[in-house]
Amino acid sequence: MKVMIRRGSDGKLSAYVPKKDLEEPIVEVEKADLWGGSITLANGWILQLPEMAPETMLPITVEARKLSGE
Image (cartoon, rainbow, N blue to C red; front, side, top):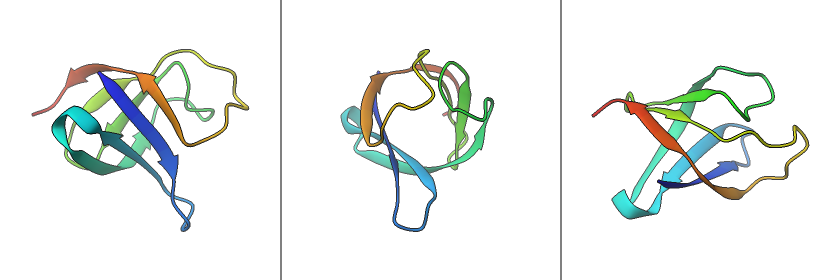
């Protein structure tokens, strides 16, 4: 699914899923550089992000895979 990852003015990461019209804060990241690991959203969804360069600029829309969650 397409997911837009961005960093808000407060420095916190969030994910927007256009197909579901859902925006949730990212509460946990598996890898410090974000890419290639999983993220957990505030609603419980766990998404697998693609491998990308650590210096990839935000905001960016990526193809993520939903691992679990409602």
